[in-house]
Amino acid sequence: MATTNPTQNIHQSAFRSMLEIEKLSGPNFNDWYRQVRINLRAEKKYQVLEEQRPVAPGPNASNEELADYAAAYDKYNEVACLMLGSMNVDLQKKFKHSFPCDMLTELKFLCEKQAGVELFDLVDQFHDLRHEQGTPVSPHILKMKRYFEQLERLNYAYPQPITISMILKSLIKDFEDFVRNYTMHSMNKTIAELHAMANEYEKKLPKKSATPQVLTIKGEGSKNRINRRERARLMGLRRRKKLKPGSLQLFVENGLQQL
Image 1 (cartoon, rainbow, N blue to C red):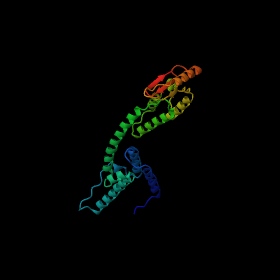
Image 2: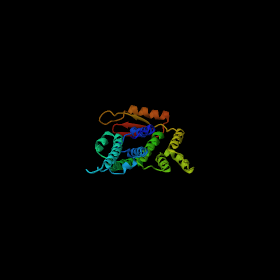
Image 3: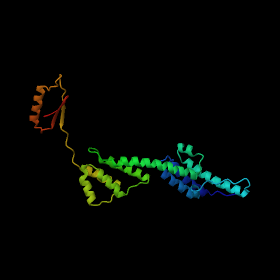
Image 4: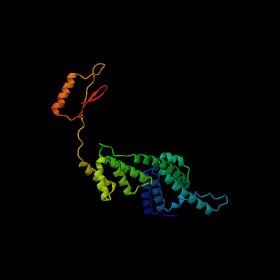
């Protein structure tokens, strides 16, 4: 009777617990498949993924052949249960009667197709991403960083110099000097380091001037005329404060009049 190695059981339990952290849902297929291969390699059952299920012996099979088949079947069944146990409920229902090799072949097809659609949408959104005027730079860079991480998860990781160049190119005109300085000195920074540098640079940017004063006056009567007394008051205000042309705007219901 074969004895069980306690140390081997501990290692096996540790490896299998890795698969319980994140269930296979589809988009995370690559990460899940890597963990499955590590587990089966540790348990010396890796070949099960690449071989078809064992064929049952004929009615005249010897006891030895029956015993070999039972041992092989148990091994394949155990791997199938390991794979099923690390999937979400929908995938478990779909593959509950499948064996490892067949299961893996169909999963690759399903998940690669799904990953292709996700990749297209991701790249489409990502290349349209621009830093908007009047918004802080930090959330923008962190958002781009998340896009790069998603691409890496789909096995389409960009080289670091490309990721940095794309971030720099997406920044608004206020960061022109920052981008020029970075490019001239050929700085080799990570996204986290670039993020910190951009934040510091933003703090030194001059504050934007206030927007022109806007006064809204509703017209009275069918002709929407501005009251003469109010116009005179506004003109006096303009002389006293010496406002620049165009800095005071007057809105009426039928349009804009500039003073």
